[in-house]
Amino acid sequence: MMFHKSVLISMNRNSFRCASLIVAFMTAMGVQAQTMEKVQEPINPKSIIDEVIWVVGDEAILKSDVETARMQALQEGVHWEGDPDCRIPEQLAVQKLFLNQADIDSIEVSEADIMQQVEDRINYWIQASGSREKLEEYKKQSISQMRNELREVLGDMMRVQEMRKHLVKDVNVLPNDVRRYFKQLPEDSIPYVPTEVEVQILTQTPKIDQEEINRVKGELRDFTERVTKGTTSFATLARLYSEDPGSARRGGELDYTGRGTLDPAFAAVAFNLTDPTKVSKIVESEFGYHIIQLIDKKGEKIKVRHILLKPKVSDEAIQQSLLRLDSIKADILDGKFTFEEGAAVISDDKDTRNNHGLMANVTQEGRTSRFKMQDLPAEVARTIENMKVGEVSTPFEMVSDRGKTVCAIVRLKNRIEGHKATVTEDFQVLKNMLLEKKRQERINSWVADKIKTTYVWINDRYKNCDFEYQGWIK
Image (cartoon, rainbow, N blue to C red):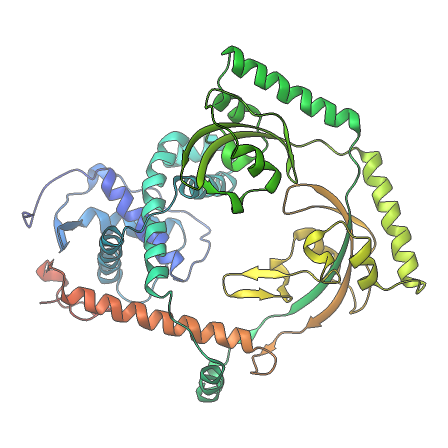
């Protein structure tokens, strides 16, 4: 594909897409971000006279892409080291390398995952601006328009992230590598590990009144009847009433999913559906009560839509659970049994019951019992903030990660105060640090090699730039 080196055009939707992607890409890749007290006014796209300033492969980077990315970075509080006039087009070029390779390697992300990211971003914007109306006024777009543009932007960003993961999937480090790395670290480069805690939890789930369960089932039966009669579509009812926020926005739709990733009771019914015009029986899962409608099946995966309703817990039931936990705490303090024994036998929390109540922090790097305070559920963090090691809390109410109201007591098992990392105490921290270093080295090497084999044209005024990667100028 050939390009004129100077074209006069108005900034179009692709410019917004590139600009938004560069800001999202910079943030995702660890570029420093900070909140700005005053947000700059949005740039007027019609005021930009455009020209092609870079070509990577058969993709052009426009002057408007760079200008809009710069303005968006200011709005979102993102800044970078080096000259923005050089670093922004270079990062746009690097993205195009990743996206081109993602096309070659058929790296994709699911529509459901993209839309979840879109909704999370829009909800963040709404909270930051104060209301939907204020956000629309500031952006000069409707929520629907923002959603459509973000879908492309975040879809590309997620494909870049998946491509990066694919490139480093076989990078690993051995224990001896970590010890050797730590010995070679200068004193001022040893990472500071913030305060971490280990917490044990014992929960009781308030009993839901049968009358409330009957109410929920009655609503779901009414929905089924309305769909069967054709008076309302399943998707419309899901958008209006489903209490699964992620899928409700998509008309209750769950993307193609394997049996193992679904709640067993939900999966047992969903995978037995054969007629897309029918609605399933009512299904009880650990999340609440559902009705399900088949959309499609592909091999061992199924695509369905569902409506979730969660029975409400009465205040009386919550008080009864809190009193029960108060009694359990008293028995622990009286020495009738230990917190560990109580958690293993009495607790309703199946995730911690087999581990004597010890909470697990599951991250991309692995599984650990240590939490930074900000990584704990908010109610737990507030409860243990001023507790002493070994102390058992008073009972409190919280919402579980499955969206259910539960009551709990917690015990602060250990507190590791903030300190400079050591191999003996913080091996995993140092391992993650070295692993990330090696992964970045692999990425840098890949980008450098890709530049060598990719057609690149750069406007003359960028040829004196101090680029992060060598080889752009050919």
